[in-house]
Length: 224
Image 1 (cartoon, helix red, strand yellow):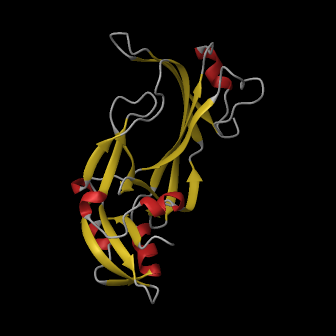
Image 2 (cartoon, rainbow, N blue to C red; image 1 turned 90 degrees about the vertical axis):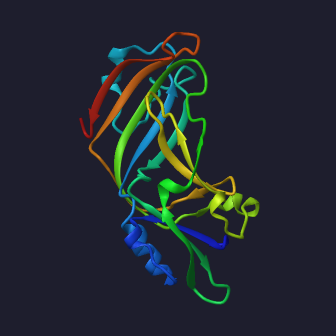
């Protein structure tokens, strides 16, 4: 907790005003996003649609399925921040205590927006594995490796929502937030995966009239 700013995403009524303890912030964050999805992407040259049913619920490729033609290019967990329903509170830790002072509270949808590249970023055939999670997050902070680059003096304009197209999606998803251009991390206090996952096989061809084509979808189940 080296960076002086702490971020909490929750319904507006749940965000503390004035002074708050760390426990207060934890409790507020528990009222925020409770869902997420895990996403993995692999290159998939030579993969056929009938192979999807043989892939695992855990999103892993065994030695027979792995190799140069199926290289992992993305492994992410994306919380459902739901900007239209949640607000964000920004808190600064007091220098001489474990108390936090509220610097700002506002609807998350009012933050600045920025589109960002996600995967895949090049043409080819790809495998996508997606599994829903229920989770509880802890309050967010600028990622440890990025803290020296992040401004310590708070300005609302420095807070940005990142939106991207994910895998074979047709619409943008909020994939995270940055402060001063640096990534904010939201540690997981608890997570539980759903007992099913979806594999998809899709191709990207930026020279075609329709750049993205979904070739096949397959739902797989835990312990199946």
